[in-house]
Image (tube, rainbow, N blue to C red):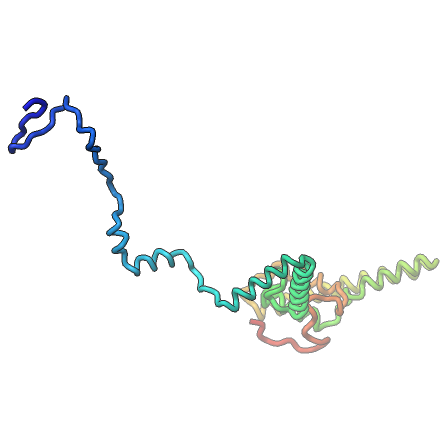
Length: 224
């Protein structure tokens, strides 16, 4: 037959020069396409796993969702109230931090005030009468005496103050370091002298953290 040729097996194939019938359309072959039967046979477990992956938190209850929505709506409707609430929260946080510092809570203390050694240094300075505590008032009185026309009295007060403060500070350093070595043999003494001097220069009621021991009170043996 014209336009056809035989192929093995007895079938006829259209020759390359023949044209297709106008009523027939060529079929397109699609690869990796999901059929309707595949989507219909998908298991409920797979659908559940696809919808729940990536959530990572429990679903809020209706009451919680309504409360959160009301809070957001109130903040949007009244910006002044939202700013006032934020200021109140910051004020409460600042008060809590200040109170924690006064009480000596190490969670609120800066790094330089933390640890059993620094706590012992504070107690050691607070349990004794430090002459450096009165140095600033005495120096101020010497300036007043000099300004009042009595330079001799003012100079005498200043010289006596400096002499007594230096002598008391040397005694403080020697005795305190001896106690630290006895109580904390494995701890370093670095910075303890300067820390004690800075605390001894402050008036007792201005010291932070607040003193935990009274004047002359025996110190506890354990600080750990």
